[in-house]
Amino acid sequence: MRLDWALAALPVVLILVLMVGFRWGAAKAGPAGWLLAVILAALRFGTGMQLLGLAHVKAMLLALDVQLIIWGAFLLYRVADEAGAVAVISESLPRLVQDRGMQALLIGWPFASFLQGVGGFGVPVAVTAPLLVGLGFQPIVAVVIPSLGHAWSVTFGSLGSSFQALMVATGLPAEQLAPPAAALLGMAGFGCGITAAHAAGNWGAVRRLAGAILLLGAVMGGVQYWLATHELWHLAGFGGSLAGLIVGLLFARQPGGREGARPLALALSAYLVLILITLGVQLISPLGEFLGRVQIRLEFPELRTSLGYVTPAESGRIIPIFRHPGALLAYSAVVGYLIYQRAGLYGPGSPRRILEGTVSRVLPASVAVLALVSMAVVMAHAGMTQLLADGLAQAAGRSFPALSPWIGALGAFMTGSNTNSNVVFGQLQLQTAQLLGLSPPILLAAQTAGGAIGSVFAPSKIILGTATAGIEGREGEVLRRLLAYCAVLLVGISLVVTMLAKR
Image (cartoon, rainbow, N blue to C red; front, side, top):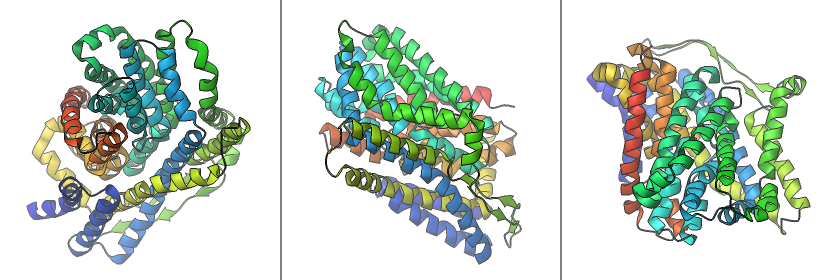
């Protein structure tokens, strides 16, 4: 039994070693973990060729479900960025707010979270770190502030790709997962604001900005919770951070601060279009039904390994092609492009640059998602995930809830992505919760909240931040500062989850 448990853990251990020890990216380490999982499943855990083939068909459907959102979200971001909209937003904020501490808080917390909501993939730190350097903050501090500030919005950011991955990995619906996840992340949001303010100016800044932190934390967490629990989860991170940004600007407005309001409204127009399209599909039933008619849907038979592990017959992931969140993002990108084009914001060759930028940035993430989803599905169908869950349940017992967010953080650290962490460990957390008689939605909320925190100190994101801040080679200093802050946030999540996890 111990040998089998160790073998079942090997694919995950391999990814850790490759990414942490050898500094491989997820696009390289993911395929290696997948290949090892396939070999072990076939040679040790009794999976035949038919089972492996069907498991990979399932995995491709699951990966497609997540990747449609990733591609659509970044395409929309590139449409706005090519038009100069992101630069306008970045330049408008300092003009609208004069207080330096409040500038750091707004740029490093709700604005960085807004960028996570619409783009992700390291964009929040890459965009905001140079801006904070320009405002006079030390480069390391300029990387640390937005890294901490946007963590709470990672799960429902990137138009909900990480949350989509959690649903895909566990098979549980948004109705069960969204309330505890949004609530836990909302609470974590206050911690993100406090740590970002502390990084900017120590405890003096925290005390001076306490009122703003309480107000913005309540607004962002409350709006995210409402959207996530009303079938608008893919807008929850974006909507919560946008609400916080607006309230923060109003809270800290200065005389004459309306100067940049009109360009800012134009810059945000593509994302306002996204809100209108999404609300239209959700609220106009005939439109939603019409767009949902065309679906990708496959039925899978019962699958059984030679060792007796059974996966019941089930439907694969159902993908409504024209109603999928990824499709809504694509519609918004097209309309946003037309708005910016009419405003004369594009130069020659813009469409080519938009598409090339999207492909070059998202293709590695797509490879990583496909490999890691395939690894997770193979492990689940071979009984390897169940075996790992049994071992963890026996070892941790009723104290497992305290460990749960740290597992999520570990997965995000080693893969550079909360999405990938949810794929790799979502099923394991679910099965462990069921074995211990704990609440699966609470532990899965801990998984994705921990993954959100862990993703901000992933080496790949730190490297991106230090590059844009002009401090290449000082990643270790940034990592040390982030680890101290993130450990505090993870301890807080562990305490909350421990109190809530009992059914």
